Length: 412
Image 1: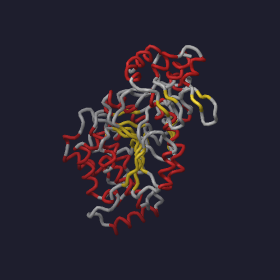
Image 2: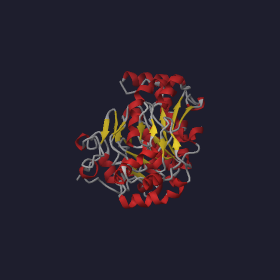
Image 3: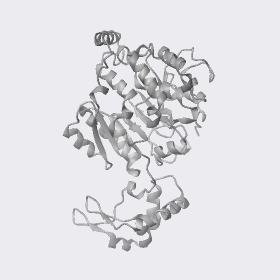
Image 4: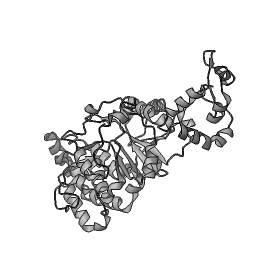
């Protein structure tokens, strides 16, 4: 029985048996302080160390068995997040959603829970520019055992600031829509991009957080994540993490880079010592800012990042500078290029991280880990390496690999 239990626990992480025994002994004193608890279904939950020490034969399980909903005896149940005693970061999943998004979030949330969060139990935060209805809340709570909070975005963060000429903004939307620019005519999309660029890190529900993991409807995780990415960020002093890089539609941001150059000229002190400008420009790692933006950005529908980077003076000043210019409404500036330009210039390369090991899908692009031996022969990933879009010409992984410290990942 002990062998079976160790095998089950090891499936929760990539540690070997020696590390597992060491880990269990480190929290055995904690586990011994708690009596067996009843779950919502009435099932006994037994502290891991006590349970392992007390069982030697299959018959030993009987004293911990409980009568289930159908009158039969059931062995003790384990919820992995309760067994995992690692410290947790001050972090949460952050989801911007509408009441109509519930169906599209079902499989997304289950993928996150099954691939990662059932082992760690991080909370979920849902934000909307209008109150969530009871149907949405009840549906969302069915798909996770973790804590869930629902918040409303303040009106001033989802409306026109006083300096915006709304007549001109409407004319610009109409022009972009006539030119078939994606979301060119959408007013709500612009409010969303402005909020995701400049206000999410100040929402009351994020104030006790250091890290967030952005999740969007209709996305999928394809690989088991057996470690805590938030702790990875902390241990390695990473500030911004991503999975997919892609090019922006040029017609949506014609003045974003010129305005960024103006900001840099006013604030050269914000440029990091070892910045990642070679990702967003094509004139080499030491190139000047006179060259054009190459449109590459980290696709922000998946990002794991340090909120304190966005709360810092450099990023705040940059956003406020852009916001006063009006490009979120007069053009269609997205939060992805804004985040990416800021991270590439204000952070050192060592503070940026590509989560190569996290297989991820968003409608339009897929990232699948390249190394077959590490991620596919081991049964960790559902996707296939040749299904990954990393080498597509429209994506920017080559630009990232030339810029990053780690370089291109090994493929076998």
